[in-house]
Amino acid sequence: MTTLEVGKKLVELVRAGKNAEAMETLYDPNIISVEAGAPAGGPTESKGVAACMEKGTEWSAHHEVHSAKADGPYPHGDRFAVLFSYDITQRDSKRRFTMNEVAVYTVKNGKIVREEFFYTI
Amino acid sequence: MTTLEVGKKLVELVRAGKNAEAMETLYDPNIISVEAGAPAGGPTESKGVAACMEKGTEWSAHHEVHSAKADGPYPHGDRFAVLFSYDITQRDSKRRFTMNEVAVYTVKNGKIVREEFFYTI
Image (tube, rainbow over all chains, first blue to last red):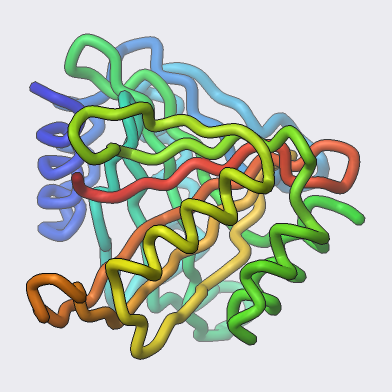
């Protein structure tokens, strides 16, 4: 698949709520995932599909997602960007708010080898 | 200025229609500007503030901008992303449409040294 095709498939799967399937089918086994920030100054970088899955599970444990939007892909060479918008409630504080972030993905040999999340910490 | 401060200033100036001022005050003299695509397979990369200004002038010659929105900045390390949305009319074809793109900026020593535009060619 071309970078644009990978991007379209990712957006399609995320819109259908199939995030796990997106990771299983589109991510390279050695994907590097980089957050803008991490709790308590921890590492912002993690490696591998399992680590990405775990981040998703951990995030869901703390946030209830009422709806999620994915806008994109916006391609540029071997990368593409997607804008995500989540209507969420933080489970601990019960606070409901909209969270927006931009994700930039790098594709190599038809697989996503790097994802970087842009958001205010 | 920090990366976030540069990003906020850029968005503020663009929202006020002060694109030239943004380039003059926030761009490094040797900024590298990279498009997702170029007309007729030309170079996608250009260098320097003057070249960026010229790209803007050239673009304006072919497009009438009815309104422009800038959403961001979304920071990530020494970079930040901005989502631009333009309501434009292509002067030649008289076609009016909305154009969205994501721009990713890299900051070094308080100046923007690289801008990359993500959009469907």
